[in-house]
Length: 130
Length: 130
Image 1 (cartoon, one colour):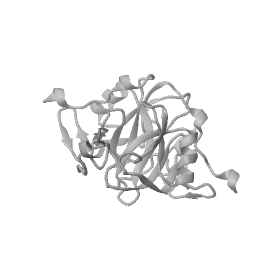
Image 2 (cartoon, chains in turn blue, green; image 1 turned 120 degrees about the vertical axis):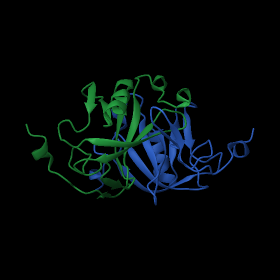
Image 3 (spheres, one colour; image 1 turned 90 degrees about the horizontal axis):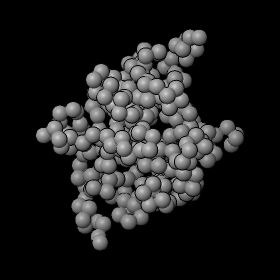
Image 4 (cartoon, chains in turn blue, red; image 1 turned 120 degrees about the horizontal axis):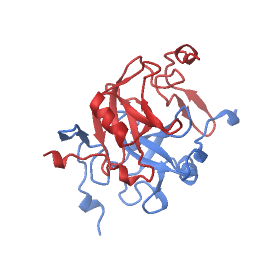
């Protein structure tokens, strides 16, 4: 029954924002984490493309609108207390990060070392033209 | 050089809390998302076990202290703008979720359906005894 389907509980956050993890639907690589509000949730369901809320620009963020690197949502997972979701996505263009790396999590760190562990897919200077 | 190693930027969040994604170090399954403050970050590095900040109890949360299901940190990834980390972990006991499922993200949802997609590993009534 539709009433039994768990939905994100946006009221759990004072800002109305909940984290959404974008994960490659085939490899399970985590590509990025961004935030959604109710409007972006509705838009994601309607469009089938991951849509976030930009905290810096304070506006709906249709991921890939500028770069073309949209995220086609293949599956949505919700956690036990309904305050985080995972968008399992097909990352068009191969890169989620504005720096050109496939994943925003392109650095592995310890207290003493930092290593690049993701692949650079595009040159941001060419994609985000002034 | 140590100065060049990126660290979480806790000042980016008004609450001083940043999201930390726990991901199985071998399968890349996302197990849970919780929050860290500077104290839990330091404790995680020191102990090698994922340590969060409990927003409900307002205290340091050494994951697994009650259930025994600790998370041994095998790797740490940090994102481009240093406001989210991934703990790649070995999940002792096989389950991260307090409901007994392997992952907190045990439900796949659409607007019309909900499906259980994770494995139930333990009975919470037996683990969290009154």
